[in-house]
Length: 114
Image (cartoon, rainbow, N blue to C red; front, side, top):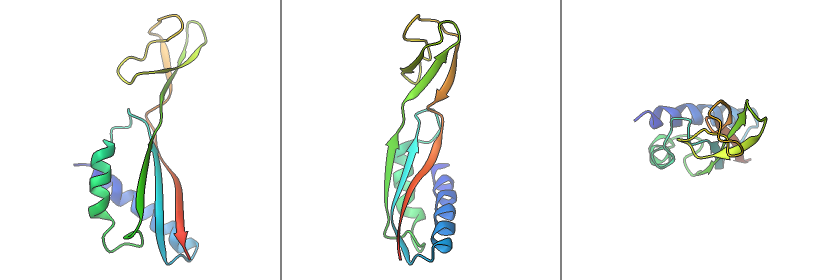
């Protein structure tokens, strides 16, 4: 389960932020991720409960926001939201699209307790 190592890396970033801002603890972590990022949200949440033990984020809540998959059509120039396993332009049906979003995982917000 690579979600545990993802959580550990995430918590290292959060710990660095907490140290920089002289926080006592972290109350909330918001992560935005696309369906194509390779991380399963449910497994990430389970791994988080294990990884956060004895860290500055031990009492923190993890909120996962799912981002849409968006593509740019190289044929008609349309940007559209598509389903993860079908990256075809919704306007013209062309398969020559460029992925704009949906494969990212971002640390969006951290609430610190000072």
